[in-house]
Length: 128
Image (cartoon, rainbow, N blue to C red; front, side, top):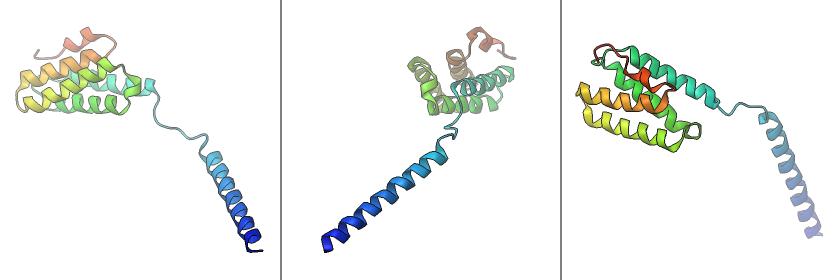
């Protein structure tokens, strides 16, 4: 008799768990899993568009490059391996450059050219 009750309780528990999983799945089925690759690319290109307008000595530039690199690394499936590698190298160069404006500019240039649709646009900076 005890086995019968144990089996009935186990079956009821399994049905409740399965039903709960179905309900949770239905509630989350239409949820957005994050930005599309087009949105990610638009954001990153916008950061580099802002970077191009800055003077080469502006200290906001390295932050824009680092932010763009972080976005690319977070959404790596939107970019080829070569792009992700170039941005990783640029961030490493930024870490070493600390207060060297020419090295920071070079790191930004490498990152910009790896990401934007028109790499020639990366050179149009005031003071460059």
